[in-house]
Structure formats: structure tokens, C-alpha cells
Length: 115
Image 1 (tube, rainbow, N blue to C red):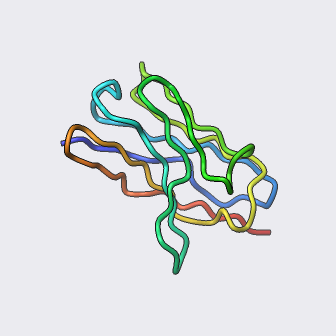
Image 2: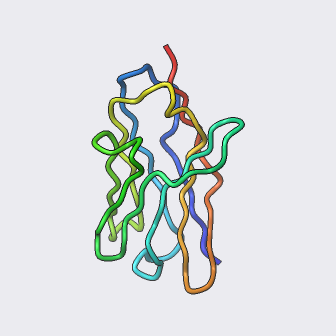
């Protein structure tokens, strides 16, 4: 069983920044690619960013150039740096990772962008 714990969400004004963290209960070297998803009210959960074991990254078009995913292997942590936040970035953000045939989710952290 792998536990993922997100933190760092909060209320921020448009144009502001937040950094989300996801701490895994195991070495992230033992996991497949790690992902950040988000789900806004009334919408489906969507993939925001991913980072592979080798450090390759990929982003949703809506966040390219504003969000950066990174990993600190020594801390078993994946980060999502979010800059130039927009109202439409408001959502619950979830960390996701796989290990073999299993997929694990964190509990989510709320990000609210509002003036």
C-alpha cells in the first residue's frame, strides 16, 4: 500500500503562485510516473502534469508555461509549482502514482483562485 499526501493548496489572487507538494510513503523510485490531476466543480478530473522516473515531463496545454512539475527523490516528494494562476485553475488537485498494476491517489488539496 502506497500513501500519497498532498499539501500546499490555498486561496490566491489571480496572477499569484502556489507550490503543491506530494509526499509518498515509499521511495518514488519504486513508483511509475507521478502525476498531478485536478477536478473543478461539475467537471471531470483532468491530467495537469506528469513526471517520469527519468525526469521527463509533460503538461496539459492549459498550464504549459505556467506550471512546473519536479521531483526530489531524497524526500520522496513531487512538487507542482503554479505561477500566473487564473480563475479557471480553481480545483481540487490530486497526486497520483502507480506501482505495477496498482494506482494510488492522494486525498487532494484545494486551490482557489479568486479576487
